[in-house]
Length: 345
Image (cartoon, rainbow, N blue to C red; front, side):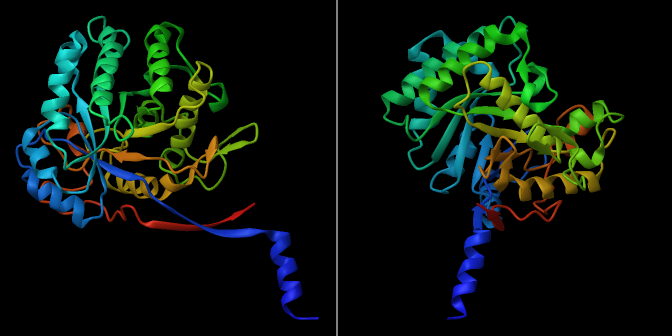
C-alpha cells in the first residue's frame, strides 16, 4: 500500500484547511488640528502605509480634490449640520450629492454616512435622519450609483438598553421610534448599519467590572460564556450585542460596519500609550476573524483616528491618532496585511 493512503486518511479525519483572509481596516481622517499635514500629504501617507479606506466626516473640498484618482475607498459624511438641508427636499439632496459626490467621478465612494451619533433624545436632529437618508439614497439611485455607494447612518452604542449577555442585546424601548425606521430603510436598500464601538469608554466608565485585558484583546481565556458563544474580548461582545438588538427589531439580515473604534493615548483614566498601542495592534489583527455571532466574517473597521487633533476637547479627544501630525507612526500597525490561520471544518 502506498504511504500516501494513510496520509490521505489522516487528512480526511482532521479535514483542516489553511485559510487566508485580508483585514478590512480603514482610518478616520479628522481635520480638527492646526498642525496637520496637507490633504495631498495625507493621501500619500494613506497610500504608503497601505491604508485602503478612509472615513471623511464632512465634504472638505480640498480633501476631495486630493482623493481624486487615489484609489482609496471613501466613507463620506453628511455632517449633522447639513441634516436639515438634505432632509428638507430632494432638490437639496441633489445639490449636496452633486457637489460632494457626483462631481468627483474619480473617487471610489463606498458609503455616505448621513449623520453621526445623532441622539434619539435630540428633538431637532433625530427626526431629520430618516428623511435625509431617504432623500440622499434616491439621489444616489438617480445617478446609477446605488450598487456602488451604500447610504447609512453612524450610531453609537448608547441606544442599547440590555447589553448582557450579548445574546440578550436589545435597544431601549424609548429609542425604537428612531431605530425602527432606520432599520427598515437599511433592509430595503441592502446597506449596513454603521456603528461606533469604543471598549475604552466602557472600561474607563466601569473598571471594577470590566478588566483592562478584556477591553484590549489580551484576556488569556473566555471571560463571558453566552450559550455556545465564548467571548474573550469586549469588542466582540459589544458588536454582538448590537447584532442581537438588530435581530429583535427586524434587522437580522443586516451587516455592521465599525465606523469608529479607538483608544486614547493620554488625557484620562486608562488612556496611556501602551494601552492604546495594545488596543490598536490587536484590533487590526482581530478584524479579519469576525465575532462569535458572525465567525469568519471579516469586520470592516475604521480606526479613529489618523492624527492627534489638537483643536479637540476634552483633553483625551486630542490623543486618538495612530500617527502624529508630523506623519510619524505612533504605533507600528500593519494595516491590511494578509492574515493566515487554520480552520477545522
